Image (cartoon, rainbow, N blue to C red):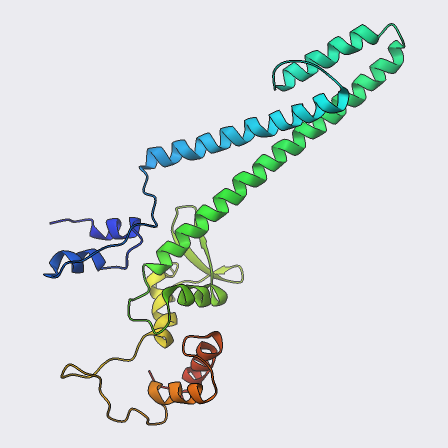
Length: 264
């Protein structure tokens, strides 16, 4: 018996219960993980560290190369130290022409190089922050998708896009997903704990779940076109050339559910 199926499902971005269902099923199942890149935590951390180091080195080398071309210097190496040493040698060689002028030029050059280095370092920080934001968003999205049931009336990707248009989510310091309205964290009114993904999704997902089918191996056709049913609503939208699953379709469906003129 595997005790941590939920952890494995989360790591593979699978819906809750998918692995348990596949294990118990007598039919052949295929779990698609072709779009995943699975790494050990230590490999992932090593990868991020190497990206940061390579980006930092590249930023410095670009700044040095630019200064070398602008000042007409010729030297080997790509570090700030190489650049300063070459500039120093050039100034000393030319100092007998106009020492005061050369000192002034040197100070100006050093100021420019410092500015270039600061800009390169600033760019590195921006790249690191952008990478972190993308990683955080991927984690949030995967966590939310894992709570979307399989029987939605529109593709999961459309559901998640609508979800993000109505909800603000971010990662807490502990790494869990929290939801906000403005700057206030949404909390359980009884426990005052932040609402979980499951709690937020339970309230949101209802309009996007497919209507239940009837018994006897087929759909329940009784009262199918009765006003207020999903089938009647879908027919109304079809007459208006509004495709099922479109943004207009979903907006109108949500509106009617709130008005209690549509029951799903």
